[in-house]
Image (cartoon, rainbow, N blue to C red):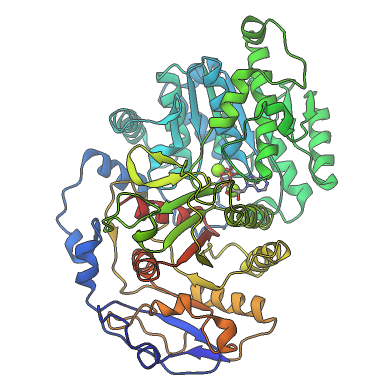
Length: 613
Ligand SMILES: Nc1ncnc2c1ncn2[C@@H]1O[C@H](COP(=O)(O)OP(=O)(O)OP(=O)(O)O)[C@@H](O)[C@H]1O
Ligand SMILES: [Mg+2]
Ligand SMILES: [Mg+2]
């Protein structure tokens, strides 16, 4: 078993001879390389905003894109995952806020502060939806963003507008730059974004500011908040261990670092090692702490959470407690509900919020129809095969398990025919985009076979030796197996902050795929149960002459060929991968491709960006 340099052109006679770049696959028996020349231009012509690097030069930048350049310049040079050398970070934050005259404004904000390993963003979005339903003007600061940096700053449930962003951004930027000294240089990226969030929420006079911690808690730049209205700690697990410590206790101690004297706090059930630390910290600061049990579906009066996955029941329950406490402490609960509600009953406003709150890239299902397709009916039988993306930005062991569980249930649910075998399509169309839909509903159940494909990447600070087996095993325990896996580098670069309008570079030169080969090796080992004997990337060379797999790579039945078919591939470009998947389904109308995209929110964001175009 070893590296495949597979003679696709011998095997498949009808592969079209469009010229496309690099492809490498693992193959069990053969060791020959297939080189299939392709013109990248063919792809570019069809691929809308995807352009080659040479074309990027002399592109005039808008005020907004210039702001992105400025933000990118704040990215510190230390490697991701290394502990930043900032002892007095919070002191500096206070000085920046002083320069901007924001201290008093922040003290007047009614803040919900949320820390945790997983579910922070979702919890914030649930709080937002609930409090908006109760009639309040909300501001939410979350991280990271998927497509556009403005997603991090939401006012009344939507991303801040470009105009407002530009106004607040340059206001902060110019004042900080004018006052920068050697001792107080421009802040690193996340500190700047946090400052900007406060600037926005104070200026926009929000009733409630819902603030997600960036990393940890105690030393996080959001921890300049002196007196939040209420604090929350979501599910704890092992992540960022290089910074927070490698025991749950140490991690919990960072997260509980957001507690403030006597300010009420809520958390979800935690492993004892973490809970002990949280309880101790709460006691020390005389924090009234409550542990919230997951939402019971009966409380929802027949409605469902829009964010799927059992883990969201915990996030939703935490958001209910946080919102209720916020309403009580700001004197609004009695005014709105006249104390009519028992603890177990949820007000209708809460139920409406929970059932409508949506957050991209978290257990999101996108039914794709290629923009080139002539079909108006998205899932029409004549349209070619179906391509369904299941997107979830899980990147820690616990969230990978949550993601695998959700995916397994989602694809299984899909395969159970609904009452009418040609169930009416009730999926909801995104308004800005005709071919992106959310929510799995009873779609036409044609007699189709299906293929489950994994599209994966993760940061090199994560541990794929844990993530990939956790994913495979959790799915397998539900009877769900992947027929192929694709390992593809993300397009987003960590030295660049981009916007939704940013041009996607498709330059393959200088791209380093050694991490993707590493992932592929771990994948193969997980599936086969033993180490591969050959080095995968030894013969790999990126130049525009190399190729994508032929479509048959996805469709040939491994069981027929007794291990003679490749099971995984490294593809150097995400735009090419999406285009290739779309082409595959067009040629195979009778097969449904269910593609799980996970391992990194950056990858998920990039895929969403490409699907929108
Ligand atoms: N309570 C939970 N338990 C386990 N996994 C979860 C939970 N909530 C969310 N996840 C997983 O974590 C992913 C990210 O969710 P979310 O954005 O809400 O969390 P976050 O804490 O803000 O993450 P990040 O560390 O990326 O900021 C989800 O896509 C899902 O896979
Ligand atoms: Mg995180
Ligand atoms: Mg987050």
